[in-house]
Image 1: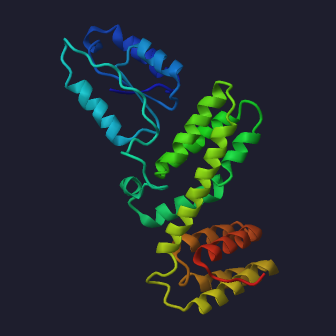
Image 2: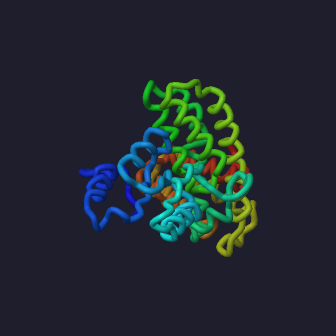
Amino acid sequence: MLMDMQMPVMDGYAATRQMRTMPALQALPVIALTAGAFKLQRDQALEAGVDDFVAKPFDVNQLIDAILKLCSRTAQAAPEPSEPAAPIADTPPVAVIDMTRVRRIWTDETALVRALLKFSEMHADSAAQIRTAPEGLGAPLAHKLKGVAAQLGMRTVAELAQEAEIGLTEGADAESVLARLQKALDEADAAIHDYARGISPTSEKNTEDRQGVAKKMQGFMEALMSDEAAQVERALHLLAGVLPDEHWSVLEKSVALYDFRGAEAATKQIAKILKIPLEE
């Protein structure tokens, strides 16, 4: 059984204790799944009666190994609980973004690019946000960053975010790890934009030359600065067959909300990714 230790109403600790009082369930293998990886949480889970402990976000292979180990045990020899693994448990040092692992999770490349660019937009300065957060709020920010980075294959970022989370929770000086975290985030940001450029500059839809693309993007920027909704929508329509879908949809959402300043910022970012020159 995979037991979520943070369930509402009755948490996994109480549920496991109750299960262990039932003769039919006393030998049922239970693996604790928890968003925390602290020794206190691990000890509490084992005390409640779980057989093993896997921290979220977990690596699929690690979880499978834990299940196989428990399912193959004998009544005479129960295994020792495995040590909690890092957020991503792939083998030796990996690239900034482990694309092999990421593609097992994200089968739609357009959605993957959108998610990576969103990460870059939201978390490029997360280390600074964690550093300057009010007391007690830095650790939750690090925890959130850890989960998002792990899902996007950024092993180093996820590991350093977890290290920062633990340090902040325990009251330790996190300055050193935050400096390393910012360096890892900078490397991830560069890798994300390299990847986006590698698949985005041209597509089946994008048959125009770069000058034509630049002209239409410049026209869209001018329309945005006019604040005339009809003009903006016409200019956006002209970009529909030019920009890759993942970029065009970002602009479409901003225009739909009449967030023209947000659309301007997004257009500049897209132009930077695609290496399209725009006039200021």
